[in-house]
Image (cartoon, rainbow, N blue to C red; front, side, top):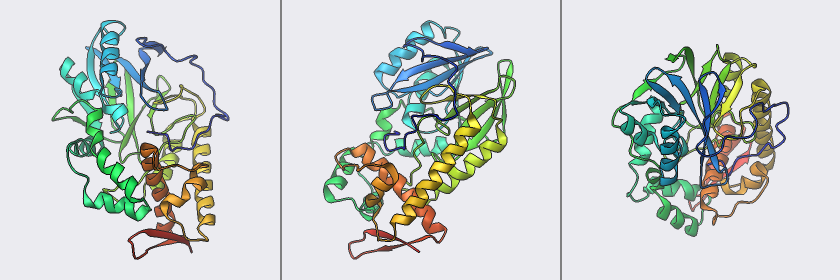
Length: 353
């Protein structure tokens, strides 16, 4: 999911106090009653971190991994071993399949409820419903406007609807989480801190007494989260939402927390990382604005934004890069820094004002 993201392998100003990641089937306690587990992903990131918090009647799980047989076997081993107390509820930070994929299976197996924010749950249901459907004309037009050729469009048509194949069927009802809500989980209280940009209503969890912050994909230590415009909302401005969320996190969550991210390792230095993410994003926008002295299509901006060309044959990354490029371009257009126009073929071109 993050193949198109900018990487920050240096991790300036961050520390990683939890050591090497847990092995398959291990649930390592990193704070009283809070366990770290790692599930495999068949993509470049290779893993997702998920969390188990001791609760009344079992564990509260935060995020679930992809809905596939390998992840199912891993969960069975964990639940027969270190998590044998069972599952009291399942919290999912956001709608992406590596986070929500096993939520349906886990809630059915353990007779418990799924907790998500409303927008994430409903959009997940919408995307899952695309399975078996033909790619809509509006989505095809979206990618044509971005500059995709017919071969890339045909690949998109063939791949359309894959989202629902990556998750077990969601339960037909859920428990809504709201921003600033306080959840009692076991002996501690956790505050819901909602961010946006990566997805519309991404839930993070902050526990003041344990000084822990479960960040999902909203804050990652070594990569920047993908911020994309989707065909369903082509005029969206998720980059503005993302930057606003970084500022809100700095105000609402103190710097002395241990951050538990969905990818890479737990780290300290939250405010340093937030500042670095914002600075990097604003520099990318400046680079893009400068290069728009000459008209560009969305697909012409990849080297400027990501430091490398991305070929249509790498279909997943090509789609992510396109969505993120349009997010940058929409941000500039909405602030009067660039203008958009379409040529006779319906392709969108952007030029700096």
